[in-house]
Image 1 (cartoon, rainbow over the protein chains, first blue to last red):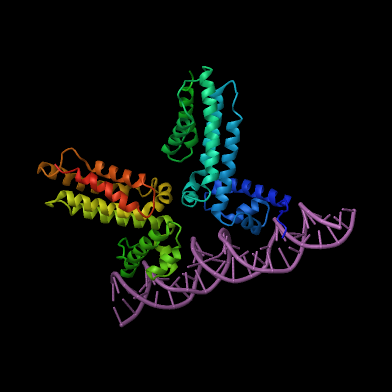
Image 2 (cartoon, rainbow over the protein chains, first blue to last red):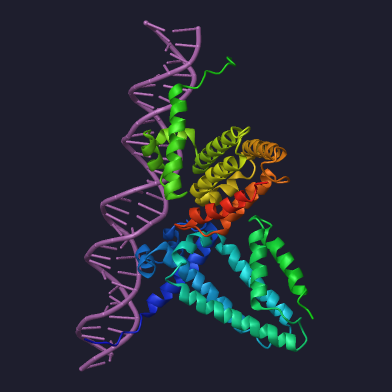
Length: 189
Length: 189
DNA sequence: TAGTTATACGGAGGTAGCCTCCGTTTTACA
DNA sequence: TGTAAAACGGAGGCTACCTCCGTATAACTA
């Protein structure tokens, strides 16, 4: 009855990361119905390894989404103290738009499964992001660099609205970013 | 060089209808990814027959959608001259909501392909529906049965907004119809 | 450092859906 | 009633899904 756990094997951790990376590419490119065997091939691992790490397609979606959201949270937290908050916000929003672009197709597939189980970890990341952005916004407002009264929710809601108002197409990203930039310019004090 | 076309074979027409009927059930139940072989089985025809009539999954979607829209247009055109326009409109909107309920999943799959090719036939049907509803609305308004100034677009936009604002779930239909009924009651003069 | 064992790996294999192709059957027409 | 155009069915080749298990390897231990 040994309660101590062995530490996870290094190759397992590495393969998990390789799979998430490959899934980002393959699913982003081919949509949520893309072949999981293609994901395994791209990651350079066997199909069995993929299924051991991610027992279902949804589990893989979640892992990719969680990973990307975490990147976004870290990026937001690194923004504090910048001397050009408008550029920082613009850059962060651009990253977020790029993410949404690769995820549009997945959202339908996610929405049902996400309902209860993994809500918590997403909620935590959302809180981290909102906190980081709000901190940046209030400090910059106090320093007179941007207008006061703007919240993280204002930024995110505007971004989502612009993303989902436009129909997908070759010009999608350009158009969304153009309108978003106008909004961001409007943040200046 | 015979320019005259043979009239289509009776079994071909019958099988086409059987396939559309089966597709309505199977795709409505199992979503847009449901097995086309299951559709063929349900229709009682071979898989080859399905693919001859509908070379792609999208072609089958279109056929089902077109068929249902045509039903809706005929229904709308049969409403004219009723002595209870509010009930007639309510009934028609309920039919439309029932249709949307079975189609939610398909819309994403359709939207890309629909873009140019089969737009025209849908446009024709939309015009027929709008004309029928507008005719009903103006006549009833002149007769003092409902308020004036309401258009077919008002009805349709309200219905779509209510349908897509609610998240899908077991209560979806009940909730949508409840709110829609309040709106319809509000049409009375 | 070498031995032990938990852990992870790969891919064969069984199932199922996609779509094509073609020999057979049925129907419209003369 | 004969015939050829039209339509039918489903076998077959392909690919993806997912499971299972013999093999390989990394973490631990003495």
